[in-house]
Amino acid sequence: MTIKLGVPSKGRLMDKTFEWFAARGITLSRSASEREYAGAVDGIDNVELVLLSAGEIPRELAAGRIHLGVTGTDLVREKLGQWDQQVEELAELGFGHADLIIAVPAAWVDVDTLDDLDAAAAAFRKHHGFRLRIATKYHRLVRDFLRTAGVADYTLVDSQGATEGTVKFETAEAVADITSTGETLRANHLKLLQDGLILRSQATLYRSRAAEMSEVDRATLKQLCHMIGAD
Amino acid sequence: MPDMATKRTAVRTAIRDEATRLRALFEAAGAQVVDPPVLQPADTLLDLYGEDIRARAYVTSDAVRGEQMLRPDFTVPVVQMHMAHGAEPARYTYAGEVFRRQEDFPDRANEYFQTGYEVFDRTDPAAADAEVFALIRAALGDVALRAATGDIGILAAAVDGLDTTPVRKAALRRHIWRPRRFRALLDRYAGRAPVPETRMALLASSDPLADCAPFIGLRDRAEIASRIARLRDDAAAPPISENDVALLDAILNVRETLPFALEHLRDISVDLPAIASAVDRLEARTTALSARGIDIETLEFEASYGRTSMEYYDGFVFGFYAEGRSDLPPVATGGRYDALTRVLGQGAEIPAVGGVIRPGLLLELRAAS
Image 1 (cartoon, one colour):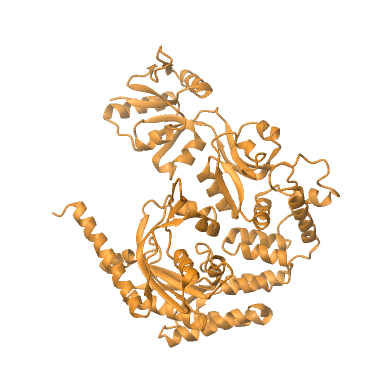
Image 2 (cartoon, one colour):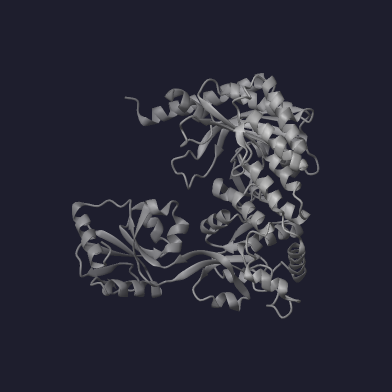
């Protein structure tokens, strides 16, 4: 048996993950062919590298098809109900920082807090006959956040990309999206709400609570945790 | 040993039988049996409940009808049906499954039976309230249950009676069902919470819209200017008095048996006469409950009951809870929803009150006792 480690299959996230493990004595590498989503692990035995899309890693962890996985906090909390009963956070990796925030047009000089957003939403609904639309792909996180804050009279519209552009195209009045520097927001004439930070996300190593493990696997996991300082 | 599938089927059959038995009781009390479809158009429910309903109901769709919801309750379709072509007065009963997502409580059922009884009758609302409560109580039989009652109408009347601007009253009324935001608004209107710096700066500026960022999106300059004007009016309005806040708190804290609650609310209404007619209605209901054989001396009344989960209830509210089983949801709930008939009635309205029982829970409790 082996411990399966899921890592994002491309880009900066994969490179940074490889660097992070390398600094802890575990060398991860893609197989020679760039097209094949498999790789090699050196520095520890009985660990298998599985390259996956970062968005699929939460689901694979929840299903127990991989034992460990690297993905963003935002994806785990959005995709897994009661996430902390399905996975355990082993280590925050210190990169891939991004904040899930709520932003409104910068011209809304009367809206700076959730309190304002709620009042503006009530007036908007009265004036336009439909609820104020917030574009996002993080439906669950945004809904839970706004419910806790007691914001009403809004509706979420799905946006899987170019979310900041939805306000200009009048398919939404506000957005809830990931930002790391806020530059895209400014370029699109949007501003953050003061108390509109929903979640601080970063790349995180998770352990599946559902994956089956043999005695050997447990020993391997223990050794791996020791190497990465998560024991 | 019976296999799991056989056992499960037997349990479901028993629940279905119990649901039908309860419906027969309501039918015998004069209700007409109705059977609304499982799939409901999502837009009505979304418009009514807002985004929160997506967290509670299952949404599905097809390319022709668009988004559909698996019915999360029967009340909305029954009201729609009545408002479209119901004769007055009317009494309806139904039994069937409802579907609720339980992502925060995975141990709770996401599909369960409800049997309900709904009354549309404008002659005597107090008597109708008592009729629904007493019928549900009787249908629950002798399982040990604690009844909780409340009245959203008293809180709404108290808000209307505050000595403050109509805009503030409307904002507070809108959030009666969101206690946290209600409290935050009240604190702000009473001058208890600090004004955010951004708001101060906005109010201090003579022309806040001068050289601001470009206007993008549907919410236009006029809407922004109109809200700024409202914020200026609000800043100029005197704070809600400590005395009014204290009266509202006194109402929210009323939690005792019905006769004491009534007496307490009468005392408060001396200082807040706006709630007097709502308290009269509570008294009329108390008399009607007593006439129906309910022991009002031990019946609990809690003024803040029903504020968190039952947005369409706007008057009498009640629930029945299993003694010593705080892990279980209420076995039966109900209340008055006059405003819902107004929203769904397209101009028409009728006083309405109803309640539902969960036969599955009732059977479980009966088996345990």
